[in-house]
Image (cartoon, rainbow, N blue to C red; front, side):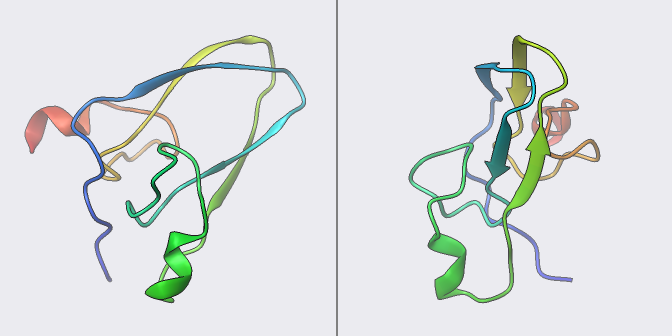
Length: 80
């Protein structure tokens, strides 16, 4: 399996809106971290992951792309 590029070593907190879809970058190449900007198309090995907020709140999206709880941070960046 191809590993994603590490885009960052800390999560990005985002205030999300209930019912809204967010498209998380899975390749690590997006310049709009933590969200997809289409950069994955150059490599052809990745696709963005859709995530829908269930409530209005702040969540922390993973930027290291190593989380087991995609797209949210699980602390995996601490092991890099």
